[in-house]
Image: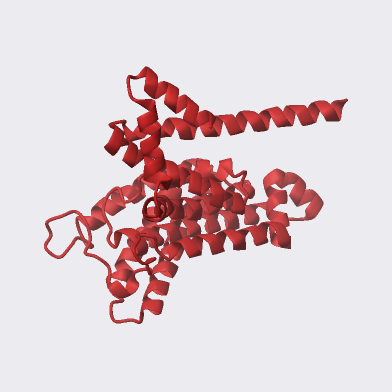
Length: 330
């Protein structure tokens, strides 16, 4: 609510009709069944899947900032496979597309993992820089090996029908929503009900203490967390190609890899919480387009809401920690 209040005040000060803008935001995100399923939830899926990967990495004390690059690696791989599996049964074709995309995301983060283990290079830097490489690679592919047959437009041909995720009738919502929910439940179980999850948390809270007290290989746990994070981001790229775009082109992602960092942090790295925060950010991004179209307000204004939400949560958490520390001291 604080974010929306700040947005309303800013719009009013800038000369816009704040009530009309917020109304358009709501209508575009939640105003109808079609808006919910074909706009909000479609944008929620990649945010949730990538957000789960970010939560996995951060929980193990590894900071994967380059999910955008891993997303694009998965999208490239999914497109290539999707163009060559037209004669396969749909279940097999879709499975091959998604598995290949997942592997591509993991492969894309292998270099940062190796640099971290071998030379101590911060993964914050290496993963981020590889995102720019991935974006350039997409440009190269859609103007070269994967360009559409007529060689006119910088995009690929559409993938085979058999390689596409099923759609909810009458909407644009695809089967990726089921994968996102299942992945969240599986990751929650892994975090809270397994020894591996406990070790991961221990490494994230204090790698040195985990090594000495728990005899846990902190470097190995962080590497596995990074690989899993990259794999999930790659899966998101495959889902986007198989369920939404059906083709590869430049700027396929509107910044999912970076927004998902906020999704994971706002959920406090809890997988089930990522489902909620992913829906929140998906709704904001879906409503932004309607706000610009129907009320004439630039869509970037929604980023104000996202920023304020994050700041408020961080301040509240800091205040809670100070209160807890003061009580412990007394």
